[in-house]
Image (cartoon, rainbow, N blue to C red; front, side, top):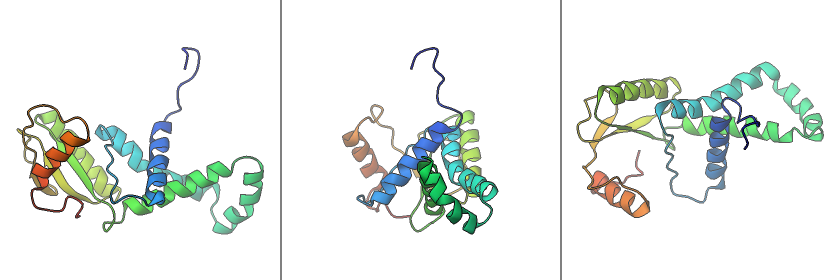
Length: 181
């Protein structure tokens, strides 16, 4: 991208991430998918995609029969991908709200800023009806009301790569199933 080209529009990163996540979930060739949604604002953007798709669909096509009637012309005009994207975003929302299939685990670090961000994120998860079942606390993190708290050990270095993360996870979940919600 050059300086004269516009960047992605607002929210397109979240939309692209949400659709990629839904495609991975739909493929079904996994035991679990772990998403590092980044800072709380990025996570909230991603969580908002399904609700935004439902909102826009309700306003653009208020009746299901109108969607069925509009489908052939939309596909013929090259907008079939838009219809599929809306469908996938809504399916992702259904998946995220299912406590039997989805669990959010939030990491909290030391410091007041981290504490406030985590409190905001836990509130937003609850408002989006996304179940949170664990708070992964780094050493020195303040107590926060919410889901069960798992204390992260102090690693000798920042864990980078699958092997380092597997070692960290083995210590964190010691004897319990890390995929259990």
